[in-house]
Image (tube, rainbow, N blue to C red):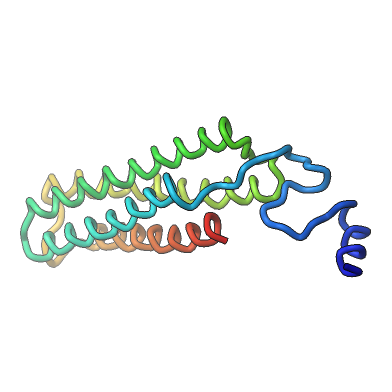
Length: 173
């Protein structure tokens, strides 16, 4: 009790050590924290599936199965852009139905900055995968010479792994 009293004097009157918070005197207004299920869980499944499809595309490239390469790379691109679309839908829902904005205290700004920065990287990755798909269709890669494909694939796997951490940190904790 004494610790909370001292903290109230240092931060603001009525401070409660709870997460999520919207700051002193409800600076950002009442809001609802994001749920881990629904769109975030679906987006997690989408990104994990895209990691699998890009791996199958890579196997297709290394084994000379060009049809498999192109088909599964197309799936990866579609999954990447689907993730971005779904994240946009989640943002609209957060703003309109949950009153969660960048001004909703530290929770709102943390949520949008972390997921938005990741969404930017997914968008960049999906664009790079689109270029790699176009190059694959034109036959630019061989089983032994495909560094650009591998570089983009590694980037995509990194984006997947980062999302897993964000999903736990932003939606579950």
